[in-house]
Image (cartoon, rainbow, N blue to C red; front, side, top):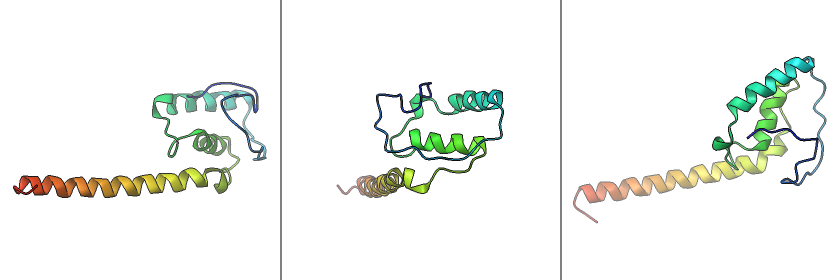
Length: 108
């Protein structure tokens, strides 16, 4: 989930580098509102290491702050993993569908 800490202050993560994203034109109160809204939209129960992780959250935050998207390299490894994971799930799903069809036809 979303929580507060100082920059680079979360001990659960290793940080590679800071990436300057520019300056938001939102007021501090508007930034607080954006973060409050994102806290509701990004519950910890929906975390996924490949499809919905802290880098994806950072991208959503930057977009909402009006500074654009984070660099593609930040999420590229997770994106590749998600594609591979999805491809494996599709293959497994089609194999399971074939097995179910064979069983329904009386073959095993």
